[in-house]
Length: 136
Image 1 (cartoon, rainbow, N blue to C red):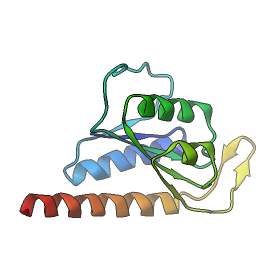
Image 2: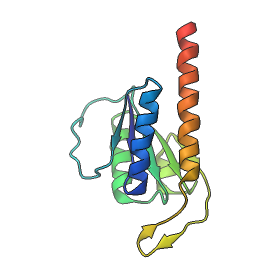
Image 3: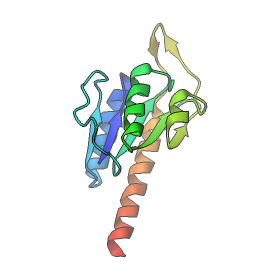
Image 4: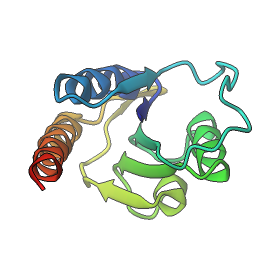
């Protein structure tokens, strides 16, 4: 199972990622409510992947979700704008995209085009690997 997690615009992209991966035959779910109780608490997630989307990589709810997954043996891949963010450091794999941050008050208006690109690349790579495994 692949879980996608994000808040705000990153939450919308998490939904897109889950749909994209599902289109490529991988069961995927988007989690966009950071306050949703952990229904799978105390379960081992050894075969699960959490793809976390966060521009700053410092949002407390995002970090809490990431820590929960790690504590339960899940793998974490983050897509964030900062390679040295807390989220990137917590992740098994971090994909930073280094775009200039744009803010309007408390809203983060940083472009999300690199995130869409990275999600598409990951989905196609996953599909290619699944096809390769099926032929072996």
